[in-house]
Image 1 (cartoon, rainbow, N blue to C red):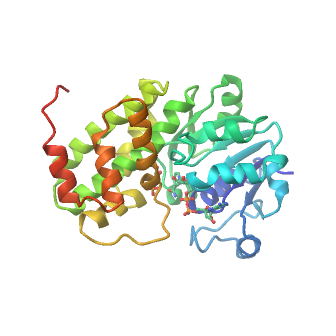
Image 2: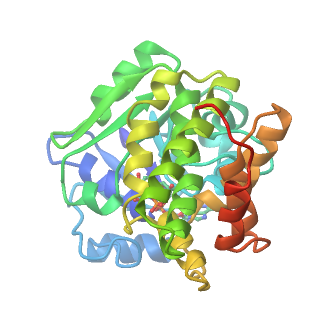
Length: 322
Ligand SMILES: NC(=O)C1=CN([C@@H]2O[C@H](COP(=O)(O)OP(=O)(O)OC[C@H]3O[C@@H](n4cnc5c(N)ncnc54)[C@H](O)[C@@H]3O)[C@@H](O)[C@H]2O)C=CC1
Ligand SMILES: O=C(CO)COP(=O)(O)O
């Protein structure tokens, strides 16, 4: 059994696994649900579909069997809406493990973030979240990156911080998983709004306003759910918002960009902000919170508003105190 299993051989899982599996580091397994993909990646030492051009270290083992779920540290790197089903399917193989979510979002059906999903699905596990500003391709190339590792249990968090940091991947510790996971989830919704703003030609000043007022929405919901404002101000909130709202390497930003230009975004791209906008809107209604940007993003992504109509809705709101 490996020290660490990374579950999900998409871009992010492959990037994390490749960095963690150094010759002198922990033993690492990259798990994929598709046996053919496991064999192809294992033989080519490259994930040609999700992370082309990055050669994977010899020390990394690529598997598709259930045994990978028995590792003491599991990093869950599949899209958010698949997390609950995947954990339930493999529940019997997961022991008293540290289950670290690397996905970003809110589960549409259950209205929970990744650590809440882990808590319900894997009762013996200790949930944690790894999140913050990082493109998979940057991590895979060994570029300097800083992320938040949040775990409610401080000692487990310290162990994970040390086990998952590398010479180029620097983890900052937090005991506020709710704040950390909401930062990572909600910034994707705001990134869609910012992409649409740029795509529709509303300009960079308007984008800065969306980022700032979007951040206010993120902080409002996080506070209502028990997250700390200072967590939102850190890497997992402000840091990831800054990255994702300003880079066309972001799939969420590009999704918005296409909608803003009146184009059809490509299908089959992991764009977490779409489902998360809907899930967040339900939470906002439940907690009686105003989240107008999230509201227009939900309408924009479901095709009921255009970018121009969305901006008109925001501009027509009553004047407010900051
Ligand atoms: N790509 C990036 O730069 C970053 C991604 N993330 C997060 O990581 C998560 C995964 O994203 P990516 O790796 O980029 O996605 P991706 O689109 O590159 O890959 C998704 C992977 O999940 C697998 N998958 C899909 N449904 C599954 C299921 N039901 N059971 C098992 N495996 C399944 C797919 O086969 C694929 O290998 C997302 O929540 C994303 O927000 C976080 C930080 C950076
Ligand atoms: O989360 C990310 C950067 O921190 C990746 O963003 P996208 O999912 O929008 O590509």
